[in-house]
Length: 294
Ligand code: NAD
Image (cartoon, rainbow, N blue to C red; front, side, top):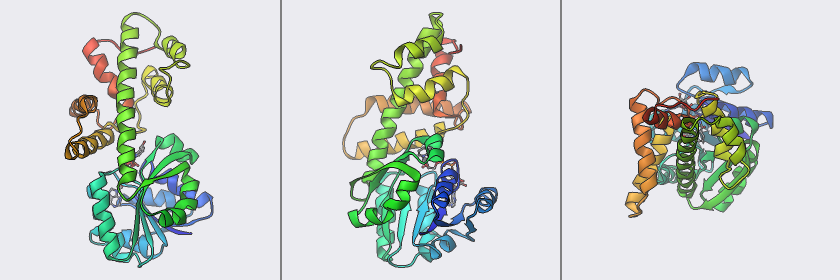
C-alpha cells in the first residue's frame, strides 16, 4: 500500500521502518528534519508537508504527542486533510483524548475521508519488534482495510468499538501501567531500605501473583538506574490527564489515578519530565532517602 506517515519520534520511526520492511511504500513527514532524513535514508520518500504525504497515499498514519498536535497535523494549514482524497483513510495511532479523536473524525468525514483511532501499547521495544498491542475505534470495514498495516506493526489489533473507543481502551491501559509502576516503586524502595538486594527481591516475586509485564520491563531499569525513555513521564502525565478529564465527564471517580497524576506533575517540576516513566521510583526514593540499587 501507499502509506503516509506523519510523526517520526520514538515510536513513529520503528513503526514506519516495519511498514517498509513488509514492502509498503512510505511518504514521511515530521516537523523535525533530522527525523525525516533518517527514515528517507532507510527507503521512504520525503513528504514536503503532512498534506503532501497524504496526497500521495491511500492511508495516512499519524503518530504525534497529543490531541493538539494531531488536530494541527490533520485539520490545520498544510495538514493531512488538505491533501487526502475522498475515500482515503486517516489512522491516528497517537494516544489522545477520545473526544479529540471524535472531533478529528468528524473533520475527516466532512471531506469523505475515513478515520480510525488506533493507539498502541508496548513502547519502543515492541515498536521495534513489530509486536505492539493496537486498540482501535472505528468502522469494521475500515478496520479490515487497514488490518494488513496493523499486522506489520503489532502482534494484536483489536476493534473495541466506534471512533474514540481505541483511546478509551488506551486510557484504561495507561491507568493500569501507571499504578503498577507506582506499586513496584514503593515495594522496591521498602526492600532496599530494609537492606535487601532489590534484584533478589525482583527475582523472588516475579513468578508469583505480583509478576507482570510492567514489573519485568521496569524493575531492571530502576535497579540499573537506567531512566532513558522509553515512555516519557510527560507523555504519561498527558495520558492520565486525558483519563481524568474523560472520567470527570462521565462522573467516574479514579482516586489512585489522581494520586499517580500528582506524582507525575511533581516529577515534571523537578526536571524529570523527559525521563522514562520508571523514574516514578525516584519520587518514592526521594521521600525515603533511599535508592533502589543492586
Ligand atoms: P515523540 O515525542 O518521540 O514523537 C512525536 C513526534 O511528532 C516528534 O518527532 C515530533 O517532532 C513530531 N511532531 C509534533 N508535532 C508535529 C506536527 N504538527 N507535524 C508533524 N510532526 C510533529 O513521542 P513518541 O514517544 O513517539 O509518542 C507518540 C505517541 O505515541 C504519543 O501519543 C504517546 O503517548 C504514544 N505512545 C508512546 C509510547 C512510548 O513508549 N514512547 C508507547 C505507547 C504510546
